[in-house]
Length: 263
Image 1: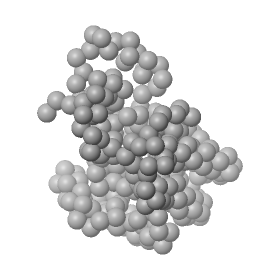
Image 2 (image 1 turned 45 degrees about the vertical axis):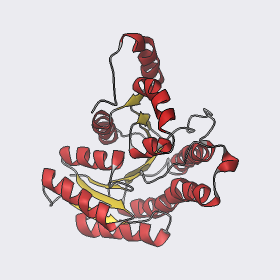
Image 3 (image 1 turned 90 degrees about the vertical axis):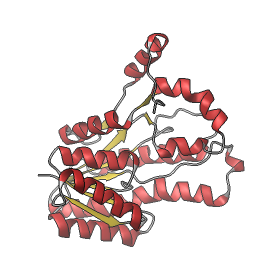
């Protein structure tokens, strides 16, 4: 029975993957920065899967001491950590870089880049000491080099995560610790939709393209979990939708009745 730790997992794709890992028989530790959402998420998972294989601990990934505590608490609960998934992160409003305030820029870089570095600096030596393990870092728009106006800082952060992951995979290639990345594609989570909370008209304009390129959470999470559990390769990039699959969606869009915004 594998033990999984997911950062940033009190909602969205992190929580959905936690649920899917539990459905696969794993033991799961979720984490978040605030107690109430964490307690609610643990209660939700426990109601579906029982409390024996579920744990939740507070962790702000931008604080190294809290990341170290998350590892120690997880090991104390389940004996070891087989898979550590760095999902914690944040986005920003779709604005030109110079219109973003200092706090927003700092928050994105600290959560999406420094947070991943902190987690890897804790998990890698601990996994080397225990004889192996796997670490997965979440990619996002910007990871593949594509550029789009309005998401410059977020895209830069995800490009950094990809470079970091490739470097770690190279540095660990002769060990029993594997590094991989997860590319979920566009999933309609709060992280995506919150970018439009001050501009609902723009969301309406983008719904057509979202219905082509985005995917529902309840399909993406279980599929990614299976890919993670099946993977044995260092440096793997686990995608939900390939480029070919995305191209096919565009080709069939005129004939599709796909609507991700139905109640």
